[in-house]
Each structure stands twice: as structure tokens, then as C-alpha cells.
Length: 121
Image 1 (cartoon, helix red, strand yellow):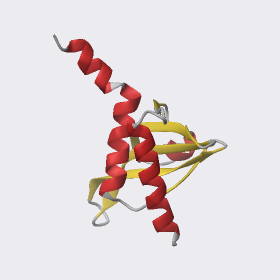
Image 2 (cartoon, helix red, strand yellow):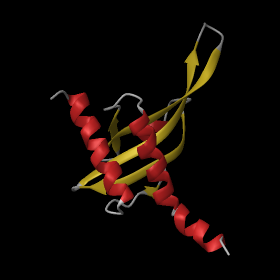
Image 3 (cartoon, rainbow, N blue to C red):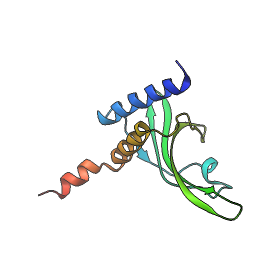
Image 4 (tube, helix red, strand yellow):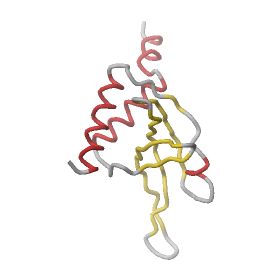
């Protein structure tokens, strides 16, 4: 099994564990290794512990240069591990599964279900 296949299987396991409440995500600040000396922007950085490892998933906005003087902003979802304050990521390329994990982790960290329940009559 290739690393990409194993990573996809891991993402599926973490997604399932997030849905069942076995993984609790928290919104934190991205480490300096992602923000220092770069124009990239990390608006949402989520971290959790899974089987004794610190896992992270985050949204990164970056400049995609199309020419010497022109660029567009791109958005990517990154998944990886936080090892000693350094994020080791990009294990999985963009996929719908990774997007689902990001959305589930974000909702879990914000406790969206509870907030909606509190506002319903």
C-alpha cells in the first residue's frame, strides 16, 4: 500500500472518529513555522490528538503567480502532524475527503451543533 493510500485510509479513520466524538478538535494559532517569512495566510488552524499523535488540519491561502507581476490567491487544505512546533504536512493532496475532514474538524472545534441547538426554539 502506497503512502498516499495509507494517508487516505488514516483520513477516513480520523473523519469517522471526529463524527463519533472520539476526536476533539481545537482552534489554535498556527505555529511560526507556517507564518514566518511568508505571505501565505492561515485563517483556520485546527489541532487534535489521535492515537498519541498531534494531528493538524488547516486552510492556507497563498499567492499563485501567473506572471512576474500578477498573481491570484489560491486556497488549499493541508493535513499533517505537529512535531515539536513544526508542522509536517502535505501528506495528502487535495481531495473531497480531506475537505470533509476539515469541515467536520472546524464544526467540532466550534461546537456548531450545540450553538444551533441553543438558538432553536
